[in-house]
Image 1 (cartoon, rainbow, N blue to C red):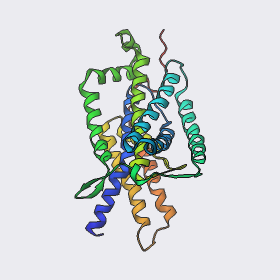
Image 2: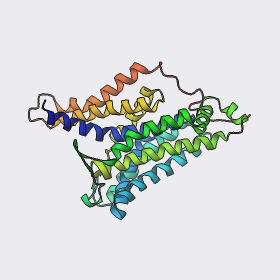
Image 3: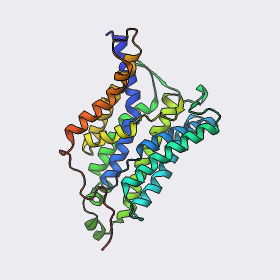
Image 4: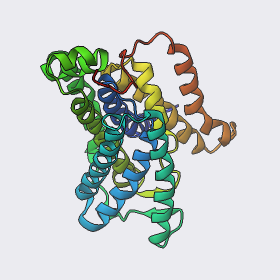
Length: 297
């Protein structure tokens, strides 16, 4: 492998880690407060579609903001169902994923390109020129965000409140903390990052939207959360690992000699996900009230 090949692989890895890392870090905030959202896959897909539409109307920054807005809107609905309505979080998350499949497929048909919509180059977020080549600015956001969230959770009063709400909501309620509102805000922040990650895929990475664009990245982000044990810094490491195997699959398929079947290569990220999760499940300690709606006695 040449030095140029290594740089290509690293560059692809950095781009591939962005949606996984941003989504996982946002989910860590929500799960710290006691809500888990398995609808991340759907938010990524819808964020990509809405982001492409926003970029078409007002440029790449509008596209990214549209993705964030989509993530916020969906997460607010999810949060209200999971907190004030005492709904089952698993069912609400599945509903998001199923809705996204139909919503994006229908939207693509309305655009006149069933199954595929290209984002014009002028509507894509410009890349930065670096010694490693052209890199998306959102790579640096994804690298910085885990450190900011780590400091927030460990060094601020608001971070302590989130932990209290997720660990012992009854005690937090007695202390005067609005448990449901805190959880709603936490999961909304997580949805905003997932929406940004989705818009990144269409506006700043692939330059297109398809019905299968998310390709399991929302579930890989959930696996990264498990791998990290709700530690944002480990989520960054997990995002890099999973992003590497996704980029490795892409890189291998571009080699002139096809010594490995491409179907097997495409399986690599998901095989690694299963191996990592199966290795850490049972060892990770999550908040005691995770997934349990709070009901004041």
